[in-house]
Image (cartoon, rainbow, N blue to C red; front, side, top):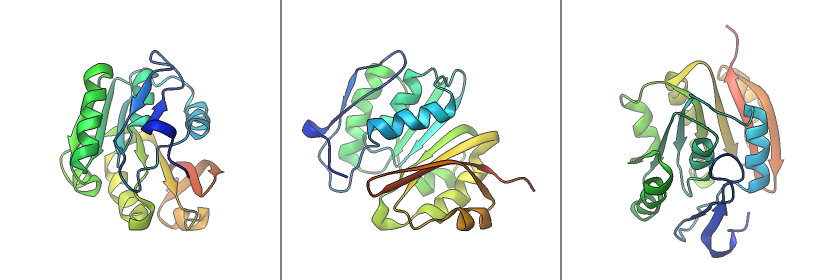
Length: 185
């Protein structure tokens, strides 16, 4: 997908609706488009009041800050790139949220606690989906959901083999996205 003009995305709903988020120009950073975020938050029910959310591979922070705007009690944004992380911290100073400079997979291996919603949108070229999902399963609160963006190489059958049920799915350009929950045992 093409990078948005002027390295900006806007929050599309909630208390901060219309606020523009700026982010540095970093190769491979692809903010989740407005249309996809609108679909995702329709799936999640628009309001995330009281929920604890994790935005792994945060990039522009569009997903995490959107969750904060929609009432999430806590949002942790994890990003390893120093330049991108500095931009996220500037946004967090205005909007809230905790920014952690760390590798997303390493963060999941630490004492992160449980989250109600986990957003996973890693760099496509690194193909981190399988390991990220395996680790995220240990950080997902009962009844929680995982939002995953991928390049189309994952199928519902592959996800089912990993113990996931595709609750909803969609596609925008080269990005495929789905909302997952743990499959019944």
